[in-house]
Length: 282
Ligand SMILES: NC(=O)c1ccc[n+]([C@@H]2O[C@H](COP(=O)([O-])OP(=O)(O)OC[C@H]3O[C@@H](n4cnc5c(N)ncnc54)[C@H](OP(=O)(O)O)[C@@H]3O)[C@@H](O)[C@H]2O)c1
Image (cartoon, rainbow, N blue to C red; front, side):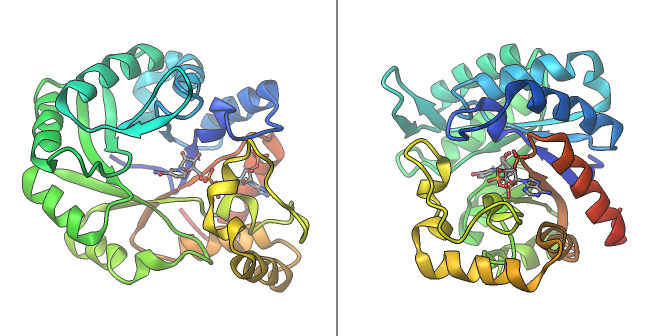
């Protein structure tokens, strides 16, 4: 898979957890991505409990061959809205059917384990994913939020091609082991939250506190005042365009195959493309 360095992060398309998203503007931004050369689109069933996949499926339905669609499995929700980890083969069998329907496609380019599930043997999960790959329902297998040890274990069980982890100026844990491992083994590294969910841009004030329905209330960068202050200091240091500096920082890591940025405003898409062009990136 030849993926664009700037990838589209589809979490906010689901709206849940992202208050203030304007659906119409988000739709226009998504459409504009193709014109900007973005070919990699990441989503997950749990984003908006199916909504992100539905919107993405509708927007991309006329151009299936030109785009690479990545979705995930392993986070299931119930009627009360509580989310549980489940990577059992039966659960995956149900999830993939629903993802295909919502995404209006008969194959997924990259199917990723969203988070590990300590209650299901990894052998069972990888066997199911390998079966789906043999059937042509999924083209490639990826993992996300895996430790280097678990990644190695998964690779021994199935042909894993990519790993998706947080990576930005404030969250650099991947540099210690996962990034070198990807470089050594030729695995794709998919960076998520390159802007630290907005903290590394000019959009937040120093007294920002995520509201009750904002996903950022769970993010350690927003929960820990010291980390939040460190983010604000980087924003100050990288004026006049801290977001551009944050994206260029990620792009400089050679092992990064693509960085997923959630963009629901056309001006952000334009700014991010310009930032990477100025940084001399592919
Ligand atoms: N595997 C996982 O567990 C996992 C976890 C988190 C995320 N992800 C994936 O990674 C994607 C991106 O990560 P993320 O959503 O956590 O964080 P992010 O992309 O670092 O940050 C998204 C936020 O940055 C804003 N933004 C984008 N461009 C901007 C710019 N030029 N200037 C100022 N603000 C800008 C967006 O605003 P607007 O919406 O207003 O444009 C949005 O509020 C997700 O959509 C998802 O696909 C995966």
